[in-house]
Amino acid sequence: MREILAFEPNVPVEVALEYPAGKPIQTEYGQRVMFSLANGNVMFLDLGTSQKINELRPKVGEPFYICKHHSGKKTDRAEWRVFRREGAEAAVRAAASPKAAQPAAAGGNHTTNGSNGNGHAASAPAQIHVGWAQFLLQQTNGLIDVYAAAVAYAKTKQGASVSAADVLELLTAAYAAQTKRGGPDVA
Image 1 (cartoon, helix red, strand yellow):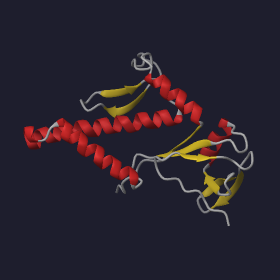
Image 2 (tube, one colour):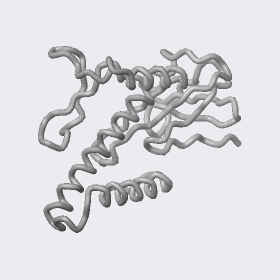
Image 3 (tube, helix red, strand yellow):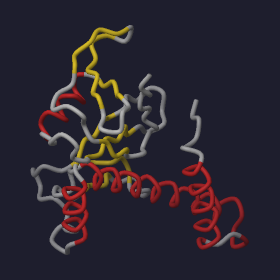
Image 4 (cartoon, helix red, strand yellow):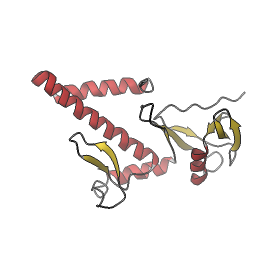
């Protein structure tokens, strides 16, 4: 019997299709699409994620990535991303260029990711919209917000006895430990 591929939140999974198209099926969760994978496993995806695969148009056996991005909040829906490795690498290179570091023009196509820690809306450069690069940007922005909040807390509660470097070290260790375990179980 074939194993069903499970997707952990925020962990990109490399897959390759055994056949050029998936098979629509009805499950207890509603309409899904079953894809046979080149490694002998299968995956079941919703129609929206299946459409993203169709738009990517991978060839049989060609590796690509799927990532189930989730904030960790039960009230937030997961966002599925489908991308090729070379597309993600190009997006990361574009994000690192000085031009990409400029804020989006007023009225332009930009996204916000909440607060930058100072109560102001933070904008992402418009060029960062491809799968893995967008995921990295969101993770980094979230960590910056957590770091800023933790530094402010340490300053308020502990004064000079806990430095910003101490907070960074603690945050890094906590994040690394949670990443190894697949992330926290957030209620």
